[in-house]
Amino acid sequence: MEQRRDAAVLVFDADDTLWENNVLFERVIDDFLDWLDHPTLDRREIRAVLDDIEAANAVVHGYGSKVFLRSLGECLERLRERPATDRERREIDGLAAALVAHQVELMPGVADTLDALAGRYDLLLLTKGEREEQQRKLDACGLLHHFDAAHVVPEKNEATYRWLAREHGFDPARAWMVGNSPKSDILPARSAGMNAVFIPNDNTWVLEHDELDPDDPGVLRLKEFPELLRHF
Image (cartoon, rainbow, N blue to C red; front, side):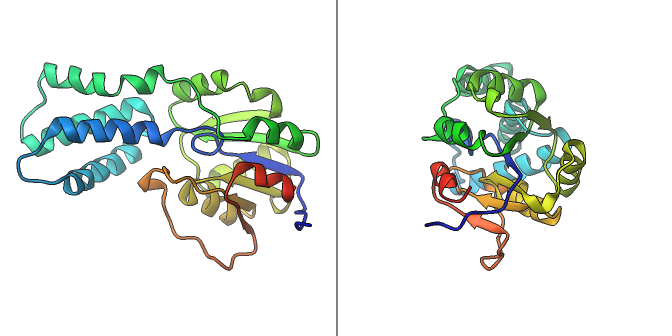
């Protein structure tokens, strides 16, 4: 039998943990690279430029589809060394139309797993991004009844997790943050005194990557979401 973890509160990330998200952006980027068709730079080199622009914009403007479209436009302008035309901006908007129209696609086993866990623990949801966009996904996901509260925050760092513990009055040492992002879910939660469950997603945004200590006893590594029931 798997070891049971001591826990009072389970905190869940949303994008790429409860449902697919970044794979949609990756598809748009692939279409953008096809459309851009730069005469000298290959796809890897163009992607490096875009990653740099996205990293800078995330610091100033946050996250979400609107910031992503801004980054695509700035990437085009940097590579073509001129302002984007109205037609080019409309074409970029067309490439990303699926980001707005997409229905929430839950990860396998998420609904049943949350249903079982909700009977044993307090469940919280913590997601970062543009509030209106994230709220749309929360409203569409059909999962909110499992959670005692859901929070949309502009950034997930150590201060965010300390605030969450104060807001809900729980002991960080008896709380677990469940997510796919080392940068936003695992490392800052650990810094705030919480435990963490790392469930990697092959499509995790490159800017969310970071190194985890393989010997950290406070991080449980799983392959799939339903495996939570073996440990909690």
